Image (cartoon, rainbow, N blue to C red; front, side, top):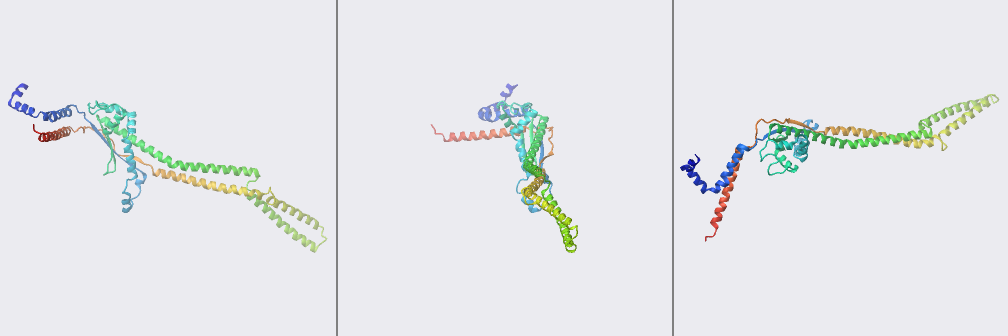
Amino acid sequence: MSADILTSPQGSRVSSWAKRNKWFVIFVIIPTLLTAIYYGFFAADIYVSESRFVIKSPDDKKPQMSSLANLIQTTGLSAGQEQANEVLDYVRSRDALAALDRHMAVRQRFANGGDIFTRFPSFITGNSFEYLYRYYSKMVDASLDPQTGTAVVKVKAFTPEDAYQINRSLLGLSEDLVNRLNARARDRGIAEAERQVQIATERTRKITAALTGYRNQVALIDPAKQAGGVIEIANQMVAQRSALQAQLETMERETPRNPAIPALRNRIAAISSQIAQQNGRVVGGANTIASKLGNYDDLLVEQKFANENLTAANAGLVQARSEAQKQQFYLERVVEPNRPDTALLPHRLLGILTVAASLLCLYFIGWMLVIGILEHAPEN
């Protein structure tokens, strides 16, 4: 049958044309036929799972601003978009690939189901992590949609379940990354405030201990109050002595021989001695209350400053925690990863036409070069 076709007039014309255009057949027809055979019978189906997410913060819920403020704010990326770019960089990174390989053996998933050209490792690539990362970069696409501001993650795999599971795991790793970044920022912002509280607390504790030690040393609870009490007693005695002195002067003037006069004089003398004794407790010596009051006042002032510093440090810690809470970001899934039910890749017809068109262009370029060389070649 095949011999009849070749010997038929139509077969003869085809054979004759092929002989005359053997280079066209070799460089265009045969590669195109091989490409068609590959895409038609051997090329593995590739499934694509897509997910979308945004990074939000509590500031995203603040009230609308004026048009001018909105115009100024939109001149740059928002904090959420900056965080989204960081997450997308992580998705495209070797760290994400290593985490995927640890959690779900992504290397094995890329090896199962593909053909000799699309699986990992292929016959032209090694099995090292660096080759795996290059392959991963082709199978996972993570980008920011400029129209909607959402992050888009597309995962290609040879089965719908693998594409879905890889995409789902990448979203989980992204959420973990956002949580780690939040924890790092929170710890960094609060750590200094907590350190200041610890310093202020230690200072307050030391000054309180010093004040207690000084009170035990001088045997006084509050020198100022105790000095005031002594002075008050002395003042009462002075008033009492003045009254007795007036009574004595009256008796000496009116009844100079009154037998009560000596007793009254003795009483006045005793009160004067007690007044001098009370005054001596407050002032006039190295062991008086006044000599101890200066150091006590210094300790009180230092304690006051320490307490105020501790109060300010605690207020700063509360504010730092509040600010850290306002700066927390979270990943909100807009579109969950899908389980594709139809292979979107490869584009078989487009691939065949692309190869054919490319080979045809290269052939004509080469043909024109050869014609040009022959035209300018010297004649023998």
